[in-house]
Image (cartoon, rainbow, N blue to C red; front, side, top):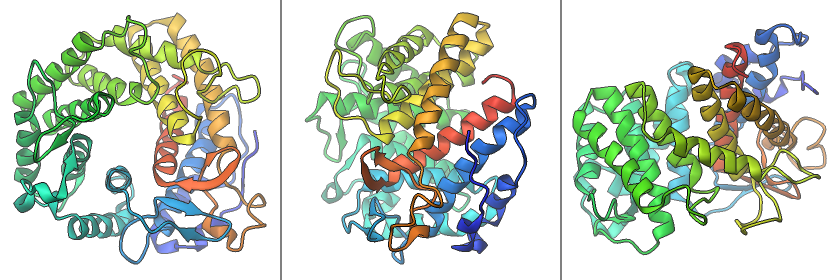
Length: 387
């Protein structure tokens, strides 16, 4: 295991990442100590988070596509990607208060650019928003210290009101429509997760009920045991919602679905050249491999391992640990380090980020966000002896 011991990355924006610096101190790894074994993964997460902070643009947004060789960002903004990053930064503000300023800056920038995010424009169809975007915005409102609870409650009520036991959630809101069943499924997992988080934060039984109904709708309409219903892009958010229900209630009727999806993700790790990534030439064609899929799939396995450990399922624990360690090696191989970036015009603008693909220098925002989450969660699981 190679550990980058340089902390020069923190010279880029020292006022923003001082709190993150604490987890990058130089200490030899002792495999007998979970705390020290976890330390490199804390460092990898901190480096990815530092890249996010130092990449914030003058507009307040973060670059979605970034070309490190030229230190240039694509101009087009992707709302879903910005929301994913905003949720992550908002969550970081609790352990790292200094992240609060860039987090607020980004949220305010999104509100200015996309008025449909503001409550007074919630029914404005001119800024057509997807179900997933509304769900992510609810999660951000729950984390934001500057947003009154009634804003989150109103957003949650709006989401609940769009659900039908027969039709599920629509893919798009204002006006309601569903053009893609695939995206409807994708966003339903995000909506269920958001409502479970709202229920946990506010003890809302209404949100708990609709989120649970959404999971039943997914199982009724896309039973996991039927061939063709699994897709690695759809599985993670569905899995996170099931895990959220489990954490709230102590039980979930969908754990078999969670484990079935995780087992199928592991089956994708059969590439001899890249054993940790979630891609195989065999079976269904799920598209080209990329860091977003790899990171979300790894988070799914970490989530499943945590629950398997609760249940004392030793067979699944062993299976998931093996796959997770492979996945961590793969993700780590995609992260830019000092030395690797010396040929770039501005090397420090790449350090800490992760390439979208192994053979493509391009950095994509959500890939960095999800990978940072993976490394941080892995460190916690190592420290508590579950990984």
